[in-house]
Length: 326
Image (cartoon, rainbow, N blue to C red; front, side):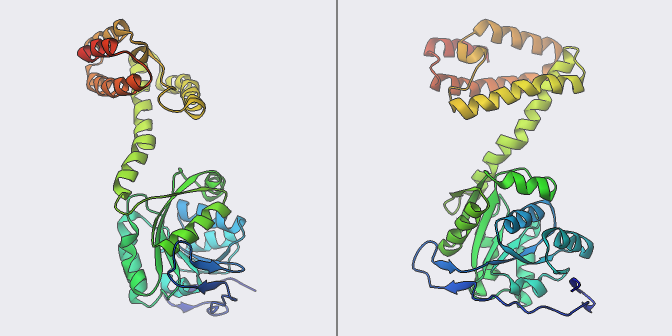
């Protein structure tokens, strides 16, 4: 049986396969968290065939979920991901495939999540009792209000992981944390999904998504920027950038291992936590004379590091001396 592609020009191949849920979902009301009882195989429709959508689709398939179909602006992208996850149905019209999913995942850029959701709702794609989720780290579940008005339960489900191509991404999702925010019924379903994929669920209170996303940007994006700054300083010291990155990677990995084993604040090392004002003074002098463009960054990070060092046991006298230098 060939694949079915539902394009803007009409149905190709064997025609649309009407969703047969085979008793997969039972709506048992709004009695509390996780009050959707899922029986047999939950069917998942994925809207968006990019890295995150592909990784999630593969991870869910490997966890035993049925991928009902893939929708994407590009028919070719939808076809490739459909082939990868073993589903026969793909389309560039989300509203054609969305009704067949018990769970609908909008894996599209943040800027278009509200408009994609609204467009599907306007065209009658959502139905009562579905769970509709997006994967944005910054957006709350409220942006899916058109789906909620159609009777669906809404969920923000964000994996705290960097995702490259689908196969690697799916492997990385195992053991990763997912944050969940939304309707209690949808959060309960999301928690089961995460557990089935081998991940860990972390529920966020409503209204906290922006701060949460800022935290992840500091942990991941700014981490890369800091490494770039370190490599830049090494270059000023005569080390070529490629070699500089190779040189600091073992140090970075060791620091991450310390964080894993010792936690905060006790994984902090270096001159500030030792109270070594002389070394900090020498750093500031060299930066001021050789690479003044890095001076403000060093001072700002140093002041924050002082706070961590105090929690790790640095005495107040040493902290005041270093603070005066910075």
